[in-house]
Image (cartoon, rainbow, N blue to C red; front, side, top):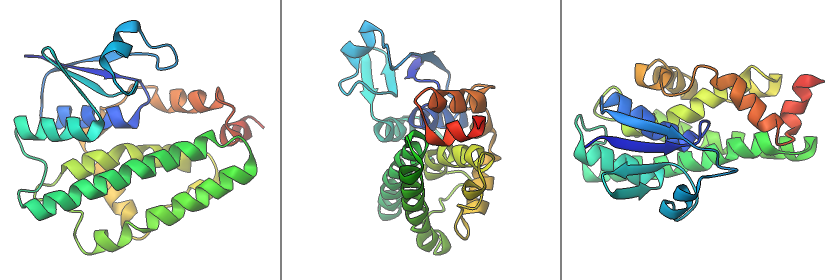
Length: 219
């Protein structure tokens, strides 16, 4: 039964699922839609009107964390820790990473300078919270690449893009997080999880939404 993943081309939450599918070498079809003008069939199967959506035969799964758990339950190799407490801890930090992704989007969507720097400072503070559990080894799994790594890789990929745009975006990594980022981004399943012109599309997307950050690149 071939899986179908419904995606918006730039969505980091869909990218999480793509990374896991590639890491587990699962065959799947990937269908891109325009979330600003979604097709009628998408509205019928997506209760929240969001991606990712995973079709499993006639069944439909939504929410990235649910999709990741399903894929790890059904397909080898297991990317979550076997210990229930450690597994729950990883799930908690995956949810925290979802918040960081939304912080990142907020920076790119900020319409003017003051709100941009306010959101940037908040994002920097929230990133700092990763240093404690990372230093304590709580964010490492039993394998070289875990479900937690897959969940954070889209964040790290976008941080690398942003780092090349403005000086204040180039020094955001707290102690230890840069090494974690590099390890994740070197994984083949991560490198191949986006379209080839992803960086250009990412910048153009937010520029079209009147992003203050992106407007400074044209100044």
